[in-house]
Length: 490
Image (cartoon, rainbow, N blue to C red):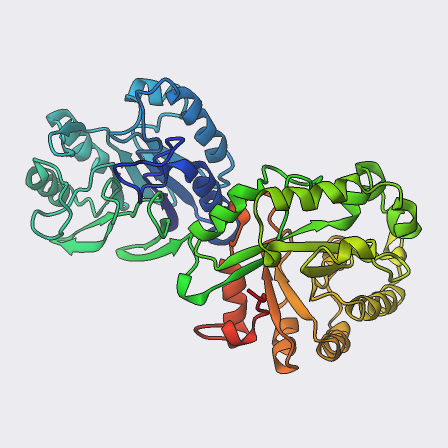
């Protein structure tokens, strides 16, 4: 009867910021929701995901269906089974469930039964449960020996056991029935602060914090028999760490999904960063899609692009229009097969920071590549790249992972030595890969600085450094990592 549950509640998608409640970030709710879903899928991997209401901030607005459809599209990305219930700010249940799937009367998973309630709203943003639904509560236990969990939007808890100002007007009656029926846990939303697990009289009560309110949190709950473990996950980075995202893309990236320079700058602040540096692919700014993705530009080098500068000029004009400061202006410079930079010096000089990237090895283009040949080529290119004036070596071994190959550990120490001598930082980058902590441990032992990069191609990815911080912890970095990180000159 062991089960892991993710709980998201109160996204309050509203299109614009709420002037009466400025802390309610309904203006970025779709980005927050996608960020939560992506993290849940990749790192939490729950058995079940719950969405407990107030997914939008105006269920009776003319855009209610459009907003619900946007959130439904993101919910459909959830890899686990998921259940959703509406809240008091959502469209009425009939409309809500014309877009979202209606949960079954009971949902059984891993020996645990889940029962969803759509209770009557009462004055003061409270609620009440009808006699008919109390009967459903009793029926949920019938011929079921495993745990039963109730799901509702408004918090349910023993009166006086929490500072939460919202509750059920007939809470005592509901809880008495829970005790008689042996129903052990009630999970709610609505109260934006949320409250920790309350255990009383054999029952437990929990309210998840609102995703729309900084630090933009969701819950992870593990049930194991009568044991309940709750962990809170914040989408916002700890502001005290003063983290900097050194690798953010723009709308000019061929692989951009929804990037926007102005929005990116705002999201960096919202997500607790000290700032960010844009670093667009040089090859994508010089060459068309077909030429870039075919890797032929890496063979021909920058000479082949001398007459195609308009997108590069557009890139720097875009940053200027957004009033970017010098430390926001970077460039991700591709490394050609001969080790030269795929960029003109006049454009390199416009960038404050350079990220050097090895995106392909000629030896790995063969149908049956020889690893020894690939290792030798990688070290030769990396040596030229770190001596070329770049500040950061981007995603050091992704060239191997993209070929479904493990990074050869024999390359770690030689690369660390190159980085140390050249005073070039190594980027920690989780975009499409899971980097090996052992390489970064050796970097730290060798005095090589680390740069954190989201490699954001979608706005939700900006400053998503939870896995980066976990990696640093594995490397023995506890608390403030400031001393070991590459610091932009601001």
